[in-house]
Length: 91
Image (cartoon, rainbow, N blue to C red; front, side, top):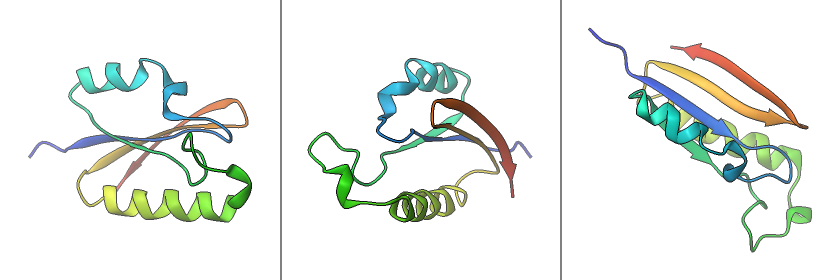
């Protein structure tokens, strides 16, 4: 049985999903499912000062837990204070 592979993207502080450039499109071309979230306060019309790191962690965790129900292996891709991180997680 073939495993379904997914990539879960989390942008960095004061960032936005567009920070990933073409990476999301290129990963989708590899037949890898993608999930891209926007952290609370990071929408263009939001005020980041109304949220804390606790809101961001909670939001990311809730979305990750929901997403992992639909895939077998997850590549976790994100930015942390300007550094690029990638982890591979599986059930």
